[in-house]
Length: 251
Image (cartoon, rainbow, N blue to C red; front, side):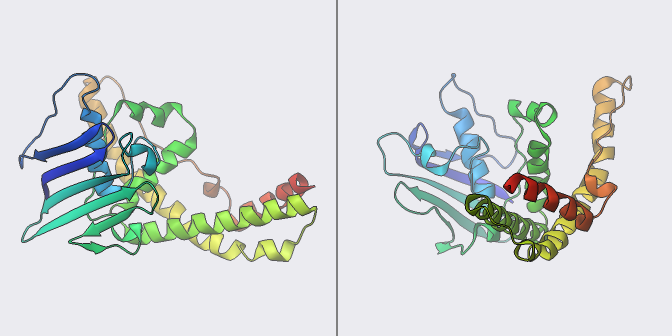
């Protein structure tokens, strides 16, 4: 799969730019502030539907404009597809493939897998575990649609449970039975997510070790290890422990 053409309209500092790419290696050259990183960010949008810099979609619209559009012509083995992403200021983002809108962003993720390498990658080491979990989720979701589904359902359930806890705190009340409704889906989806993250890290580890040996000239070794409370406990027990903490915080 090759991105043949890219067109940007009102995307960040690009009013209207068009690019045609080589099927081999492509390089962007320009002064600081010319918008090289913004081109890469547009390509990232084509892959996962959002900025790799963490910006909200609205903030990527060029100043004093009402929308941005990213168009791309994708060459597959035996066909060509047109991907278009449009973000109006006052409406929902729309992603289309060959003029047909996706019902869900999840239906698009995995169509055009990508790996973004940037100076911010050092945050994977220096930041909290949350950034590393997001990295794992982004990588696995592009090649495993079932994982993406489980992740979305897990996050939705956690949000619903947290909303109920906020209601309890605001109204100085408590209902264990209502909270336990969420235990089964959290356990079911969370356990599957844990297993696939663990498998991914186990597959990644020898690859990292091999390249690090090359970089260090064989003088150093490195390992990637997945740490989780689930290695020593079950989701059911962890939920029971968190339930008591949640109750104490509520009161």
